[in-house]
Image 1 (cartoon, one colour):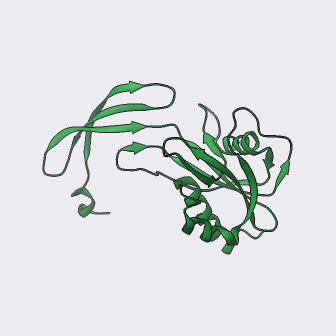
Image 2 (cartoon, rainbow, N blue to C red):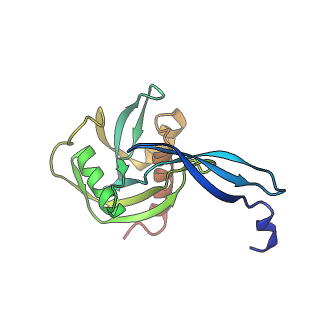
Length: 187
């Protein structure tokens, strides 16, 4: 990249753990910004998440209608969950689809990885796409969704515009799946 990249690079001198449990780790990083100023900056560490866009042969996507209590808001979401320690994320992706929807996805492959809140949160999201799924039972465990439906991809832009789809993993997954379908996904 050259020397221009070095002009804005922050130096991390260390990090101390402030809070830690199964779901979240909060740290204070000792950072130095260009120009020499040094201070502590909050850092949130979350486990990796695997999210799957499941498409059928008619280009419909498997979505769940869910309530998110933090925002007291409903919306359509893709199935997904946290990658367990030592678990291959592609296994997580398939497992979460089956647990949350009752469908076993076929032909699961990695689509894209991203950080949804890169400023001070480490929460890598791994997006997968699956072409086809088989209904193998009912969703397991806790109630994940009020409804599970196959929605035509052609309806997705309108759902996003209305605010029915609003979470980052679902937005990025569906938009990336549209790109995938228009290019190499038809095989």
